[in-house]
Length: 620
Image 1 (spheres, rainbow, N blue to C red):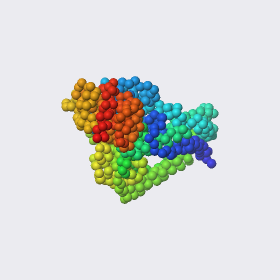
Image 2 (cartoon, helix red, strand yellow):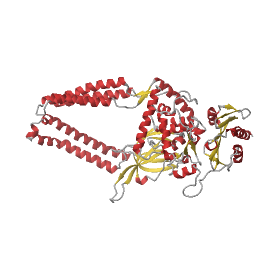
Image 3 (cartoon, rainbow, N blue to C red):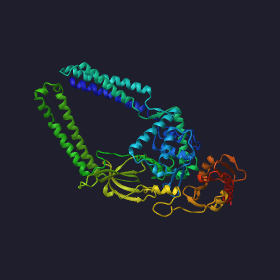
Image 4 (cartoon, rainbow, N blue to C red):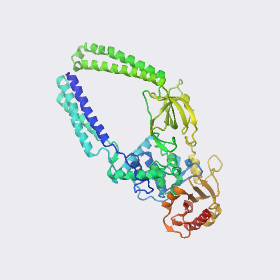
């Protein structure tokens, strides 16, 4: 065997040993599938962020931050107000209650609100990070804090624990020895004036071992524990129970104060479509997108290719294939001539390179042959791709810029030529984005159901037809956040005119009755808010003062689980309770709640009378 082949083989085999062992450990430590417990409305004790980690296969996603934000509202530290029927206009208010007992990541989310708030108010859409570097830093810290809490509870552990890291370090030591053997063998058989070959060989071992050991010890995620698997099973049961009630998914963020922590846990487990769509803290993940294709809401994982054949035109692919084949043939046919010419130089022929001349020629020939094979394969697959187009039907999940090209004018900005088009065709919960040419970019919008003709291998779209336009699922218009803050503070809007509102007197309580019961000195108005059941907000010039909520069916039962406790109120409905600034009653399978808002806090004595009046009219 050629010494050069032996040396390269020793290095290659050593690297293969280490990375093979690493891949094996990744496979062994991959979190196993979890069997969901029976659907149940009972909430386990873990906070929403940890529940999100358990429910997503021991990964911390953006749902953890969004669910934590909602949970702070459910616990009374924040208040979400929706001024009209658009949940994107929701504002977040500091309630003035000093948070206690918060985890590190809950403090981080709360401090984010405090930092952005103006006079205690921040539009929900303004929570988005504008600086990518700041978003990554904030997200990295939050993920680390959620993982630390999960580990402290015994629910997760480092994917590569100490035993596995020690094992991989031992393998790294063996692999480093093999690498050192190859290097040392070469150094000893080619003595020259390099200096101390033994020292260089020792240095090769130290460097290779250090690099491989560092790679073995790098963090690569979390894995399950026995208690974690049990907790994950319970949370998956909660998720199935929540998903079994379609109306729950439509609840907006402003409903969190009425539905207690269910909305936060629903967001953590991917069961709250509206709230999860509205809340975006700048970490929006285009790789996990909501879809309704097939009749039910679900999330689809999308992969976005970056280079290679993806999205390319037929002429470019054919040109690339032919060019690769020609270059490869030239290298394979004539590449060895370069080595032969180099060997004619005395300095080269007398150096260590001479021992590798034959191997180098062989590698050049093999490289050329591989280029020829790649080029021919590209040409053949492009022709097949062109001859066998495919038609698919699905829902548009995401459209985003992919490639640009410089314009002919030096002063002009780069012009878009290709877009990503992510489509859910209903065949899997995973998909790869297509390449959408500029000429077709305006043919559809997010949420549309489309029929598209594509070339599967290059993933390029050639034609689009809209089957059904999406309804309210597309990108939302820019929200004037300054006006939202002013409206929330009851100041004149910028741009003139009063903030539009859906005004409708509730049939259970009238604005005049609320003003009288609360002994409110200024006029009170009522307006309907979006949400399942009926939500009426009563407001005065000083701000919102009371909210009336009626819920039926499963949502009524869900509301009663949290509202049906406190001090009993005899003679009101089937059962009634007061607790703090709220009162609730159960009436023939429905739940009625009245809750004082911050501007009217301290007037709890009026709640029993208002609740009794609303319940009496509901039964009438």
